[in-house]
Length: 201
Image 1 (cartoon, rainbow, N blue to C red):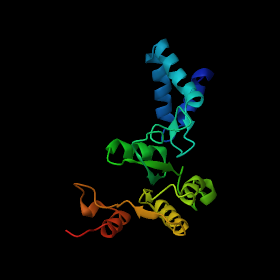
Image 2 (tube, helix red, strand yellow; image 1 turned 30 degrees about the vertical axis):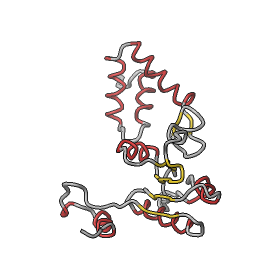
Image 3 (cartoon, helix red, strand yellow; image 1 turned 90 degrees about the vertical axis):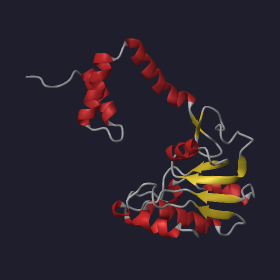
Image 4 (spheres, rainbow, N blue to C red; image 1 turned 135 degrees about the horizontal axis):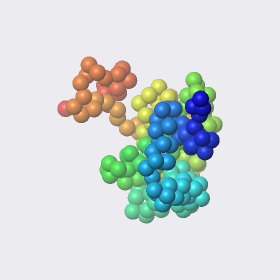
């Protein structure tokens, strides 16, 4: 008895399974849904959207964000404070912070964090353009917004040491207790950051 999917469907399953967080069963469900329930025009739109990613989306030459132009919409916005740079690990982090709507400076995307266990070193991160901006006296404050993980803390400490030699203010966003959070369920790193970020009441 042949229990294999047709090759064409199997190729689509393999494509879905290659996505982060998608296992074999989920990939099968996605592929079968596409075949059984999506109309031809929906599949064409989906395919065109995928093809357009590499054709129309670029990395901003200034900050590392994604854009349809050389500069992203944030870097090209003259109303923002271009002397204040918020450093994040990923493009996803940038969009998460931007949705809050409180920050009015610009960003710099590192594309990761230092991780000795994963073999990610300093040279693998997008650090040099940031240092060049500081060297050229284009920046008055660098805000480090790497994640509150061992890798994020290692990266923040490295950047802080690296930038000490320049005339620039380096700050770190506070990490602490989430609103409505129960202390007994919090991890050690969150509790440490809660103490470090304490202020006069």
